[in-house]
Length: 132
Image (cartoon, rainbow, N blue to C red; front, side, top):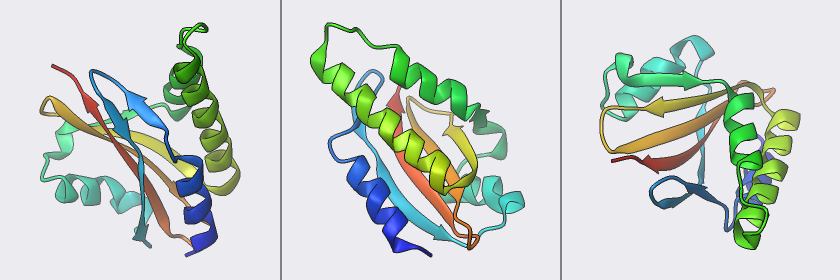
């Protein structure tokens, strides 16, 4: 595991929020060497959820929405989007097999951004969507 990558991602996410019905920070974690074929099972187990509640999103569409769907006159939102763009660029540069997975089934929905380092370690960036 390359802790420099985790430190870089963590630093890029300082003060960055995911806006839904509330604002949630992003947390970075090293999940170790989980084969991609077992990742969804691990997520379902970790979040005590049925595999059918896992919804995979296209990461390009997900990040484009976060970066481009902001009010240009709202300076804090524009700055948040700028930071998300830098974070996403870093992910694309350092991780492979990037996925965005929502763990649906309640009003508080964990949103996981996953990717793999060259050594096979899985990096998970978690935030929370609140949808009532």
